[in-house]
Every structure is written in structure tokens, then in C-alpha cells.
Length: 373
Ligand code: 1BN
Ligand code: ZN
Image 1 (cartoon, rainbow, N blue to C red):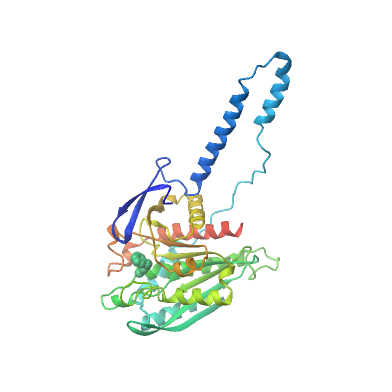
Image 2: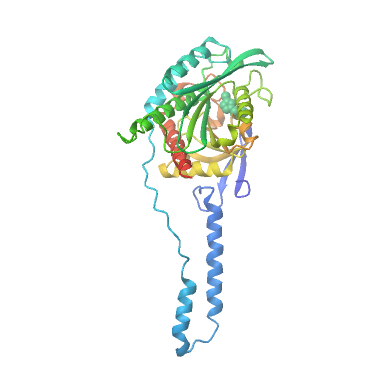
């Protein structure tokens, strides 16, 4: 990305605007090298053809020359894959928005709080009947000890490998007394995962009746949804004061061999702001960002992706550091100049179901595309 675009520094957190060099509108990042490559190939072919034109062609040699020429010009026989006509996945955006409202209505949900416990119960109640694992431990921080709990719902697939989708449910401890409710930051990530769980559950119900497949394995990879805890700092964001839940989970999954099975890991964060802008994060894995962009294009959502870039620290980092293909899908800036982020103004009125739909459909489409690899 850095080599391909002009960056213009903007605002806090080192956000940069990306000005694409090819064409007026943003290009899918993965398409530019291919375009360049085809230009090189076409030029080489044309130059070969031109050098032949210098030789003398007599009537007796004309037919043979024509054959040679047509053979030279014949394109290599290639199997063209059939166009992808699969319907775009469609989440229930109104329902996801209602989940966001219910989660936000608990109030501040910082680690160790009663509201945090209520929210854990709310998530687990939604996952009744699913395969759920909890990763619970205690963390020692500069503000004291806190219980931390990652909640993992597993939707097993026929293919060997895991697609993990993560989103944090905690809100900020330092903001506990200012009426901070984190509608977008914590609320939308919790809600979209609940909606993904509904979709993955329905997927098995939609399997062919009589095939014996209902309620069993999905057609692609296993999908694991992870409601992460302790993403936020308890005092001030730093390597040691942040990402408590995922630092623990990544270490655990490294030890038990899970990390090696993860084909892709995607983090949902602050995805619900009206007219959402998903950042292009340079800490994320390039091919996965490109695939997500291709999925967004299938839905006509690409104008909501990658207009701005930054180097994000988020729940994907502990996995990036261990070589897992990972992407942070984060909507920033949140409000003009990011004014709603980590303030008491992070409330429901700043959000829109349409943004949940755009990001939700794109991520489920990405899962479908990953399943085909
Ligand atoms: C995302 C949501 N983050 C925190 N809450 C990560 C982040 C860290 C975002 C620093 C911006 C700056
Ligand atoms: Zn936050």
C-alpha cells in the first residue's frame, strides 16, 4: 500500500488519506499490480509482432506467414472460471442494530463491573445451543486485578481450518464515571458478532432437507466468533496496558496448536457510525485486506473502505505478531476529526443500521470467498 499511494497525514492517531494513482476513484488494492503486469505483457507481445513486420513477405510465403502469425497471436488456452453468481450474504441489520441498543443500555461495561457481568450473561444467553468455550483468567494491571473472559462460539465446518472473527465487548475503565456507554466502541462489535452467530446457525438450517446435513458441519472452514474482553486500556493505551484478552488468547492458541489452523482472522471494531469509513490498516495482512475489498465491491460498498490509512493497534496485533493472516476492520475517524471516539458522545444517535449492513455483509462475503480457496 505504501509504495502504491500518496499519503497525506491527517488528524490524530496518524491517519493518512490515500490518493490512488490510477484513475479518479479508488482501485481495489490488489488489482493494480495485475493491471501493470498485463500492460507489460501486451507491450512485449506487440514488440514481437512489430519485429516480424520488418521481413519481406512474398505471395508464396504469405500463407505460411499468416499461419505463423495467427499461431503467434493465438492466446494460450486457459480455462476461464465461471463468473461468481453466488448471492451476497444478507445480515438482518435491524436486528443487529437492536442488539447494539440493548448492549449499550447496560451502561458502562468496564472490566470488573456488574454491567460487564450482565453483558457476559446476555451474550451467553444468545448462544444457547451453540458450541461455546470460555477463556477466563485474572489480569494484574496498574489499577489492580480484574477478571477477564473471552467468549468463543464455534461453528464447525467440513474443511480443515478456522476463520476467526473477533470483536471486543468491554468499555473503558478510565471513562467509567463520565456516563460513557460505548455504543459504537464495544456496542457494535458485540452486536455484529451476535448477528453473525444467527447467520451461521441459520446456514445449517438452510442445508438441504433430507441430506442429513442440518445442524451439522458448514460447507467451508470452521468459523469461530470471539467476543474479546479487556481490549481497552485501564489507564493509558500502551503495549502492556491494552489487549488483555487477546494477548492471553493468542498465547494460549499458540501453545495448543490452534494458531496454525487459522486461515484468516478479522477484528470488528467501531463499525456502526453513519456513513462508516473502514480504515486501511498497515499492520493488517495485505492479501486479506484486498480480499475484503473484493467482497465489498461485490456488494457495491467499496466507497466505505480504505479512503484513509493508519497503523492500527487493536485486537489483531497479538495474532499478527505470531504470523496469523489478520485484518482490523475498524471504522475511523468516528465523527469529524474522531470527536466521538472515547467520549460520552459515543451514543446510539451517531449510528446507523446501514453501516452494520455494509460491514456485516462484506465480512460474511469474505468468509464465503475464503471458503472457496
Ligand atoms: C479501538 C477501539 N481501539 C480502542 N478502542 C484501538 C485504538 C487504539 C484506536 C489507539 C485508536 C487509537
Ligand atoms: Zn475504544
